[in-house]
Image (cartoon, rainbow, N blue to C red; front, side, top):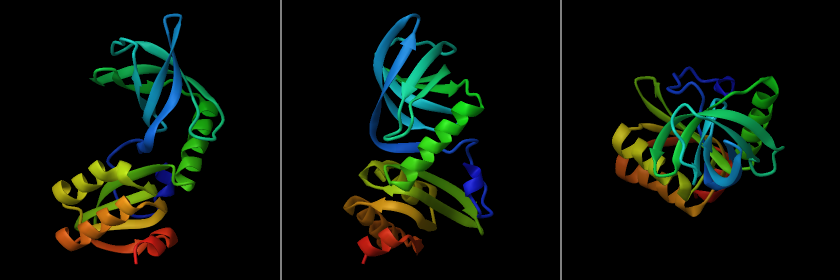
Length: 194
């Protein structure tokens, strides 16, 4: 996904994490058993999911999911972390075809505003937050952390494809309370934020 970034900024993560408004349904396979799970976020390198399986770091699982209208993605992954009760991070065992399917699924969800990527970069001596895809209530924690705690000085909304009233309210608060600049806006942001 870094090839999408034409700006001279430094990305902190190897693969950008795509956040969804709500967990997406998925099926998991582990030791001959199958169970439903919830896909929380996704990157080209892995995913975060919820499951009733009791998994240990290092175990391999099978994952089947769609990212909204995408093709079915069927891929193996290794559990890399346990974040809380039933919440896991895993790294993909992906070949070229799987990488292509995941990339297409991510890009389609971003274009339709059903998912979002929020990144913070050092840019011209300040902090720049860039948002692609949807800017909705689901982004509130990451957005406000960036503005209030990290000290974002500028927000680039030129790649936002959908914004709700909460997204507009967060932007207005960033400008009025924190003095954050929001000069680059997509057409949907400009129409919603007048």
